[in-house]
Amino acid sequence: MPAIVLRQVTKRFAGGPPAVRDLDLTIPDASFTTLLGPSGCGKTTTLRMIAGLELPTDGEIDIGERNVFSLAQGRSLAPAKRGLGLVFQSYALWPHLSVRQNIAFGLEVQKVNRAETKRRVEAVAESLQIDAYLERYTSELSGGQQQRVAIARVLVMRPDVLLLDEPLSNLDAKLRMDMRAELKRLHAETGATVIYVTHDQLEALTMSTHIALMRDGVLQQFAPPLELYAQPANRFAADFLGNPRINLLEGVVEAGAIVSHGLRVQVGGDGVLAARPGERLTIGLRAEELRLEREGGSGRAAVRILSVLPTGADWYYRVGLGDAVLTVRDDRHPDLREGEQVWLVAAPNPLKVFDEAGRSRTALSGRDAPAAAAQAPGPAPIERRESEREEARA
Ligand SMILES: Nc1ncnc2c1ncn2[C@@H]1O[C@H](COP(=O)(O)OP(=O)(O)OP(=O)(O)O)[C@@H](O)[C@H]1O
Ligand SMILES: [Mg+2]
Image 1 (cartoon, rainbow, N blue to C red):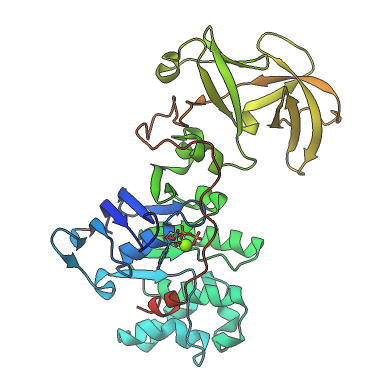
Image 2 (image 1 turned 180 degrees about the vertical axis):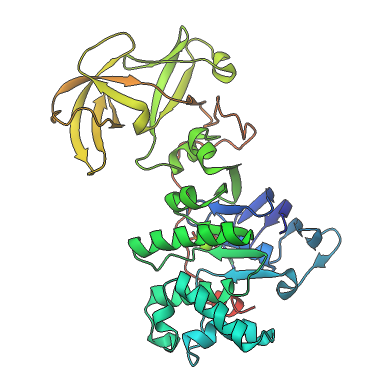
């Protein structure tokens, strides 16, 4: 099962900033790698360049042992010769064929015998919960059912490399959860290299072995999901991953701690120790790294409860600390009420601290990741491209 290597890959479309910039990325063999980031950050463009549907403006791409694109050597292998299975954001099924015929199509082209075809089609249809519709025309299916037929059609071919662009976008919450689990299971079972595109951070966290987080065409961090969550390389990564959003609190370095409105967070570890007293830094505190106490004490800060937000499984609180509003998860105080004053304790593990340029001062990985300042998110969403419908058949 091949690794996929992108070296200094750039894509410029006429008249805009680069859609993808100097992308260096090694997608490990047999990994489930997710390209994650806000709308317009270059995920689909990256996937299309790997597939050969879009020509990079610069750089090189290898799939396994083979170089499939090199600007310097003038090489670009046709999509069909790259040995990939593709499911795109918008997909096209054959409307005049049944679900069974749609899924079986590729196997028939490859002259797989009838018994084997039947077995494989039915197995994949069952795993994607579309076995009840096998004899229907695809035009008689809902959007979510059609989307699963599109996935089945590719999975049935058992490709070594599978490229999936938001393949679950049309499904309801429950089915989406089922399908995430199913795709994860299929990945483990087949050992294929999967490249998965989504802008849904929860989907990325739950499914992937690796996440490549992008912003404005630039790779921000490449790491396993829990590492990305625990040790974001910059402020953007910290803010993009996690629900509820991470609390970002400005503070000042004072005698071995970062202090903000009376809340003291002890600092240790090499990165932060280098901080100068008086330096302004931003601490990232996830809701589960904060807790509320009824008693004051050293390092604790007075906060007021603004709202109590039980979710059934967890208790969340919005609390006011000076002019900042933070989200806290703490399940020990079901009796706390809005308006009460309590004390906030921060126990970040690991510590997440960002400098004024947005760079992490503590992340172990991605130290050289680009700064991501705290400004507005990326560009507005784009229209879905109709041309993808045709190309998805390639
Ligand atoms: N064919 C094209 N011509 C011109 N610009 C394009 C073209 N395709 C993409 N772009 C631009 O390149 C950037 C990246 O687009 P891309 O489709 O890769 O984003 P994405 O991360 O997949 O977003 P989404 O989550 O909305 O699908 C966008 O700014 C987009 O407008
Ligand atoms: Mg896209």
